[in-house]
Amino acid sequence: MEKGNSGFSETGLRRLREVLARHVESGKIPGLVALVSRGGETHVEAVGTMRHDGGTPMRRDTIFRMASTSKPVAMAAAMVLLDECRLRLDDVVDPWLPELADRQVLKRIDGPLDDTVPARRPITVRDLLTSTFGLGMDMTALGAPIMGAIFERGLTPDLPEPMPEPDEWMRRLGTLPLMYQPGERWQYQISHDVLSVLVARVTGQSFETFLRERIFDPLGMKDTAFHVPADKLDRLPTLYAPDPQTGEFHVWDEAAGGRWSKPPAFQGSGGGLVSTVDDYHAYFQMLLNGGMHGSERILSRPAVELMTTNRLTPEQNAARNALATDNVHLSFGQGQHGGWGMGMAVRTYRGDYASIGQFGWDGGSGTSTYADPDNQLTGILLTQVGMSVPDPARLIHDFWTTLYQAIDD
Image 1: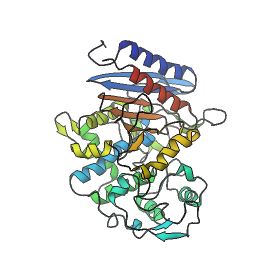
Image 2: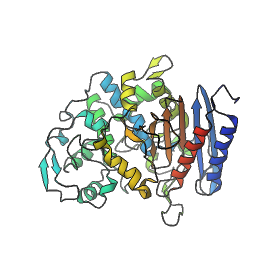
Image 3: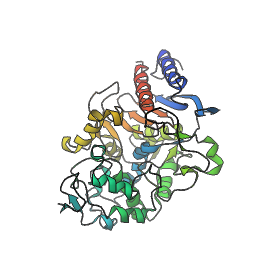
Image 4: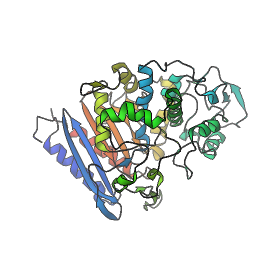
């Protein structure tokens, strides 16, 4: 690509490729696919192989387990329902999610599960959309009885047993007290999976069917789903979770016979999607275009603005900042953005090379997907090396650093 028609310099793109290749050549990242796009020009790099011991090369159409980068995409289903007034931001969720009515709240986060006070108010749609409904994966509370109970009941993905079907999952969730009062504090993960159930109950369709009809098909996201059909399994790499001590590659999920080889009992918006760089590019470009895909409107501009601008008060955001800045050994420095919209992080301060206003998220399977309205830029980096070690996070940091260096105007 010539300098000037894309806003990337040739030198910058060459450096980007060299940095990506260096990570693969180090032996820490078997393979990756990266897409960068600006001003109508798109540049894709596929480096390395599908397995750490060689084999099939990575390709542009390789399908990846998106992990938590599912969140910004799956959130669109709820925004469609807001646009159509089938949900309102301050609707109480009890009519659709009776399992969450009449909540008790822990008196203290590390206290026994029966030491509670009544919730001050019911849970609303807004609480779920902003991850502030009162329960979540709180890495600052590992070891507390409530976190033990969440794991024991199988309420999160990535456990040895997959999550149960939605009604049973909600029943188990309903047996727990909240960790915080509704609306009080941002907490990770669980609200997204509750939203999967809410969308399905409001629409009378499966979560995936609704997403497919309203988001995936209109955007041409033909490889995005909650599992990989048999005729595409050869495009799904092995997912590794390296040993945190030795770095040895442990297989977390194989393609054939693995978790994503058949439809899951629970279609979880927190981390269940598989996709490709081109499918994700179509989605993030639609957000950059204020909800438009070509001449077709997918989401209203206000819905996109709600998702992609900060929704949190400093008090709500305290836990999120603590994870990023005080638990770097867990977050590897990820998550230092300052803000959170709906389903994604939003940069509210200049913490690294990226502009304020950049939005998107990273995934525990070594995925990173962001768009930047200021620079009209999209970047997508996909690997299948889990964040049990810092290597994928370091690759992600280097990808964004070199991508921002490559901007040339």
